[in-house]
Structure formats: structure tokens, C-alpha cells
Length: 383
Image 1 (cartoon, rainbow, N blue to C red):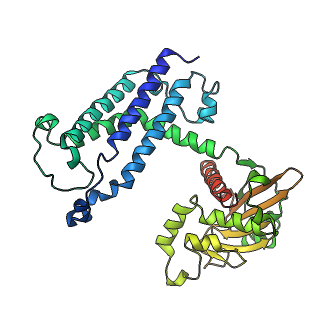
Image 2 (image 1 turned 45 degrees about the vertical axis):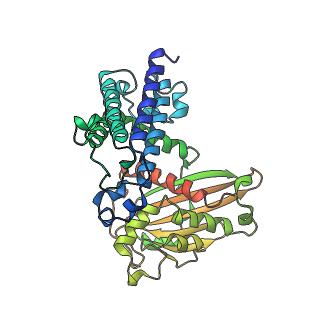
Image 3 (image 1 turned 180 degrees about the vertical axis):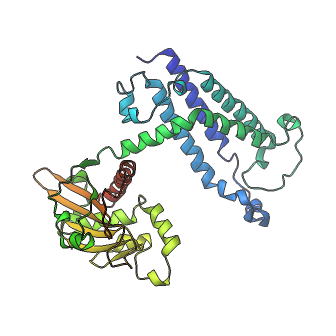
């Protein structure tokens, strides 16, 4: 049962989050003169102003709301009650009771946020309209109020707020992120991939893995009601798997890897490959299509597209590290769903291997990455 202690702590966390969000929000918009002044354009802190600051304040507020909910329903047994609904798989997060109940650490962090907010908001009020997140000379010298005691009260307050959030929210921020991720990917299920699967008996697999080295393999399944899918993708067979494949490569789940590969490998030599999000979204992924110098489409049917992965497609011979990645769709009218699949098969192609290419912890990380790809790809096929 929710106790008075958990209620007061939850409300305190919400207040701390609200104050932190205000401290990260510009109190005044920049003037036209401030935006036009040359010194600001070359200032090194410009990246943390404007939209970035607003986004950060919203993120802080969202995490604080999540933190407050976890605190409110936290119990000694994390698998019971509403906590397991709010935070799927809490047993994997190692939630620290000292950070979810009243404790000296919690009290110190909340006091740090409260005092820091008071100082920073006093600086807001002291400078009035002159306080913006853009560097410029104020129209007057302020020596009263909090400025009579501290030369840089705004920075001092922000440091105290940041320290308080670090003490209290380092763990819960991770819990919120992990909990949110598990909730977001809750419908993605990994099912056994038997060795009788066609991918292990394909001509391509036999060529790339001539010594039949052990594989690291998995299959992630996601079922989506047909009523939620864009009906135009169901009119012609093969369109749905094309859109699903385009969603994998153009979605934000692949965005960071795509940016890394572009920085490292995009050049005139690879200009014939797909690099931009618009190209990846428009492509129909015919065999021979090259993707960000890391993937090559090697097979396409109306219900699946298979790419070779593991290294640059410019290396066509047997590779030390290789793999096949399959994106598939099965429309099941009797069940009223479309079943999307992401199938991975990694192996050492060159030389004899005695064990699988990935250790267990890397396999787990790969599966989480696969779930992220699945969810971002699904968005490309919905109404």
C-alpha cells in the first residue's frame, strides 16, 4: 500500500523536477540585436542554448515524472504491484532502496536542487529582461539582490541543481531510460531459430561459411494488427516488405550507426551506395543494392529481403567476420495480423572457428538493438 512517506517523496521529486526544468528553460527570448551580434555566433556554448535547452528541460521533467511514479509505487519486492506495470523487468535494473525512499542521500540531493533553483531563479529575477541564454552585454550593471553576494549566481545555482540531480537521479535516470525502452519494445519477442531454418541451408550461407563454423543467430518477431497497417501496402504483394525494409534503414534506430558509417566511409568511391535517409526510404531494395558500405541486398522475394552484413560489400570474398540479416513479413488474414521478423545469423567465414562469434553479453546487446530497429521500422508501415 502507498505510504505517507512515499507520497511526500514522490511530490518532492516532482517539485524538484519542475524546478530543474525551469532552471534549464530560457527565461526570455533573445532580442534581435543579441541574435545578430557577431560574438555570439562564434561562442562555444551556443550549442546548449535555444532549442537544446528547451528539449533538455522537457527531458528532465519527463524523467522526474517517471521517477515520482516509481517512488510512489516502489515496494521491497519489485515484481509486484503497479511498479511492474510502470517499469517492466525492474528486477534487471538493480533499483537501490536508498534512492527510492527517504534517506540522507535523497534529502541532500533534494536540498541541493531546491537551493540551487532558488539561487538561479533569483538571478533570473535580478537581471529581468537582460537574462537570456545568448551572450551579450546587459543594459545596466546589477549589484543588488543575489548579485551582492555571488558574482555568478546563475552558474552557481545551476551547478547545485546539477549536483543534486546527479546524486539522486543517476540511478533512477538509468532506470527510467531502461524502463521506457523495455516498455517501448514490449511487443518484440525473440523466438527460437531452429537449425533447420532455410537461412542455414541457403546457397549463400554455404558459400560465405564454407567450413560451417558455429553461428550466433536469433529471430525477433513483432505482430501488428492489419487494421493498423497502411492499406496501400497490402494492395500489391511485396510492397509491405519493401516498406518494412526501408523503415529499418531510414528509421532513427539506425541513424547513429548510419552517421558513423557515413563519417568513416562515405566518399566518391562509395557514391553509388545508399546513404541519405531519403534514399533509404525510397529504395525498393533490389538485389545488389549497397547500403552505407556495410550491407548488400543478396536476395529478395515478395515476403523477405536478405542482406549480407559484417563488413564492406566491396569485399566480396569470404570474410573473417560475416553474416546474413533477413527482414520478413507474413500476412496472416485468419489471425488479422502481419508478422514482421528480423533474423540475424553471424559467423566467421575465413578460417576454422571453435565457438560462436559473439559472447553472451554482446548477444544480449545485439538483441536490444534489434528490438529498436524493429520498432522504428514498424513506424514506416503504419497508417
